[in-house]
Every structure is written in structure tokens, then in C-alpha cells.
Image (cartoon, rainbow over all chains, first blue to last red; front, side, top):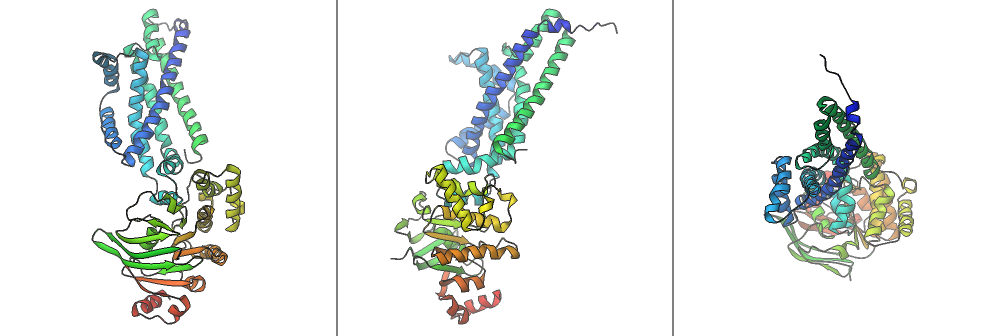
Length: 222
Length: 242
């Protein structure tokens, strides 16, 4: 094998890599926060059968879970403009990530809510708490704690999945990789380094989320 | 005027007629022991008094607050009626103190410091003043049940409902909970308890209510009823317990 490795040719573009990494993290963060919010709303609607939202969320979840993320992204970016709903690549990417994660977290959080013992809700009712108070103070914190590991996994999956957004020219990390190797023709070195960055990001994000869960949700979020 | 007034109460679970016309008046400060075999309707009756179960016919009034059948907004009523459950039902993610404070903070909108002080006073009343920061899974069953009693008392209810509150406890833990209830009775709190602790019912109860097949079969002074049951059903129930 006579191939000469040249990683310096990649590091010449380190500012591009850095910007791509930052965009990937930003996309993930916004998607995670908003997606979790949607997931909580969807989960309570479905678990407590709040009409008509329970049906709306049921359809939404099935639609998203049974179609590829790339198609969801293309539909938002290329499809919606036909209806006069035009988004730039970042708006489309963020919207797609939120919609996608929202559907999965709806199902995950719902499992946590449904695991609440009936007696705890009765105890809260007999203390004259309202249903929103019961949800906020009695049901949600232990439910999130129970399913937090699954939520962390889903968020990491979504972060890795944001690489697909390069296909609509959102300049995240994969886009940066494609750009760099098209300039320096160092495909192996470029994708090797980007692989390492994704790996480190995934491990770091998982750690961060796990720690945040322990802090916010207490001892049960393991 | 009785504190709790129950009149011609009927309830069905599907085709099963579980309460067949209950009339019961409970005066302020009375301790009522509801006894009977499982399936006799005693827990269902108790749960209608704070609206955890709906009913089909009849009326219930607590301290002038009328409960209508199938009513959903029961919060005014529930501020007057506290409840303690067989399975404790503490909120597992909150410490003992936070369990006691939660409803006073968010339902009664009590200022933080007042709620803390009240929670400490209630935990002192049940002998757990040093467990304010302990979580439910760090407490024994008896301690958890005492926290549950403190939690109900913090809302300063007019009536406290106790649904077989010692049935899930190991035998050696029953007495610490009964001791708390005995103190409450001595303080003059109105108590309605479904119980299998016959000796306790006899000792602390002002009135014994024996339920049989969805009706009040016999009721009156506990000493008299235990010594001299008027119906063969009560006699056989007492015999089967002892």
C-alpha cells in the first residue's frame, strides 16, 4: 500500500469543521428541547386521552415513525414551498428534527406516564390538586426519571441523524466533511476525522444528558 | 346537623349493585369504624365521601358541601376531607417534608416558610420530625404511612378517611400507626376508618358500622355490638376474625 496519509490537509479546514460541529450541536439542542416539549404534550394527550389531541398525536406519531427522516426533511424543504410555505435550509432542518424527535419522545414519555401507580394520582386528587397540578408535580417528574435513559438514547440517535440535513445544504458537520474532501481530495482523512468528532460528540452528549437527568430528576434517572 | 350526612346512597359497578341504600350520619369528633367482609362495600362507601368513586343515587353532604352524583369538580369538598390509603401512596420523587408540603403550597398557596413550618409540625405530630429530608424508599412501611397521615393532616381537613391503613404493614409496624390514629382520635378529629383491626375499632371507635352485601347491617356502640351482636352475620364475622 503506497497511500500517504495527510491529515494536515484536513486541519487546514479546521474552521469549517468547527463551524459544522457547532451547527450540528445547535440543531441537536434546539431539536432536543422543543422535541421533548412536544413529546410531553403528546404523551399526556395520549395517556390521559385528552380529546381531540390524543387522536391527532396518534396519527402524527404513526406518520413520523413509519417514514424515513430524509423523506420528512425533503418534504418540508422541497415539498412545502409548492403550498407557498417556504423555509430556508436551517428552518427546514430544525423543523424536521423537532417533528421527528417529538414523535419518538411522545411514545417514550407516554410509557413513563402510564407507569404511574393509580394510587398516587388518587392521593393527589384527595389533596384537592387540579389535574394540571397533578400532572406537573406528581406524574411528570417520576415519569421522566423512569424513561430518561431512553430519552437520552433517542436524542443521541437524532444528533447522529442530523447528518442527513447535509442533503438540503444545511452546513452542519457532514456537509463540512463533504465540502472539505471535495476541495482537498482526502476522503479517508476527512471522513476519519469527522467520524471521530461524531463519536466524541455522541459520548459527550450522552454523558451530559445523563448528568442533567440526575441533577434535575433526582436519583431515579439512571 | 351532622358533619357527614349520607342519605339513600346507591352505587352500581356495571350490573353489580355494590351500595344498596346507605344512610349514615357522622357527628363532628366521632370515630367511625367501618367493618365487614371484602366485597361488602365498605371501601367503596368510604371512597364516595371524597368523590374518588361516583355514585348513582342519593346524596352526600360534608360540612354543608353537597356532592352530586358524577360531579367532576370536587376540589372544594376535598379540602375538607383528607384520605389515607392502604398502600401509603407517597410521591416517590419527593422527600417526606415535600410530600407533606406539596398540597399546602400549590393548592392552598401557602408561603414557602409557613408550609415548611406546618410540615414540620405535622411530622412532629406523627413522630417523624427527624425524617423531613428522607425519601419514601428510605422509610419503613409504618413510617411511610405516618408521613401519609401527616400529609393529609396538613390540609386541615374536617374529616379524615382511613382506608385499611394498616393492612399493607408488617405486623410489628401496625402499632406505631395505630398509636398515631389513637392520638388523633383523642384530639377530637373526625375519623372514618375501614379497618380489620377489631380490637382497635372496639377501643377507639365511637360507632361501629357493620356492612353486609352493600347495606349497613348493624351499627352502634362498639362495646355493645362486639359483646352482643344482634344479627347472625355480625356474630359470624366477629367469630371469623377472632
